[in-house]
Length: 395
Image 1 (cartoon, rainbow, N blue to C red):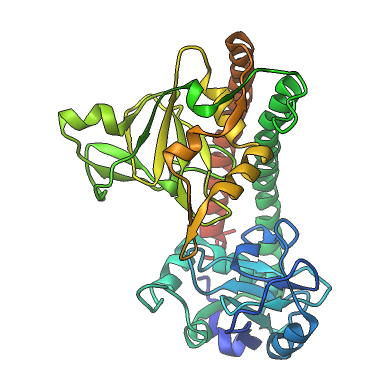
Image 2 (image 1 turned 90 degrees about the vertical axis):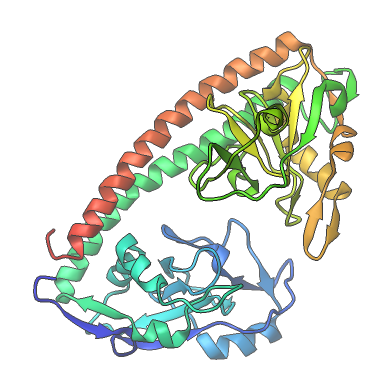
């Protein structure tokens, strides 16, 4: 590491603590309450999905962690453990115990350098090897305090962080462009068809079942690390209506099972069981290679008089989400909607030629999204290379 000394975080930081270990009631207003879901590698994003607690609960929590601008917020348990972000908020907020607070000593460590170092893939993998627990994997404060951080001179830390910040800004621009394209499809839908809640264009109203050739549940067989067919599960359906193929499992299917459990291009996949805010996630399958689908998904295959792009986008409208929330049944924190209920949702039915025109416009958006995803992948690769060189002292 180019002669850099290292130091345990316990010595490099003047404070290491975490948030509350009990769950205060969440309110619609009050004092901001930051959890792991608000911590992302490109920063702490409280305002996209704000949570609040009462003033009394805040005072009890704040006395423990006292977050300040320049602190590093570090996820220490759950699915996103290991992500760090520098706190830029000047206002007071409370934190859940899934978030650790690291306050670097100004004389030896800058928050920006520490944040980039913690987020570097090789560093993160090494740290996560120290996680404990079975059902919920986590880093303890003792483990975090024992992590040894490299300490180049402060001017060098600032130079490295500045280079990585500039490279990361390019990735952020691509992510922002993709986010805008995600909303563009919904905008096109509303422009062409109007709000389904009011049906201003007077399309005939059917049920979703009237638009379908079939509605089928996926396989309940367990998927494995290897197999002939990739398996789409509920985590492969994104909030924005895309299929995310970054984390796949596999299975083998007998010849007689393939028609029932394989999806084909144009099939609509509906997530029937999930947390209340995620149940009903819907995506259209656009891949050419055959894939299986798991039992928490319903495969909706439209008939010849309708276009799957129209149905998929309809099910992702704000109107459909409200309808689905009113329909779903919750058991032990999980919500469920069955195939019969999905098919009973009322839907305006434009002529198929209008649906096809919408599908053509969506195809143009998808082409742009593909270009931005490819560009983002290149920037991600560049950024990873810069990180690797930076923390070996080779920048």
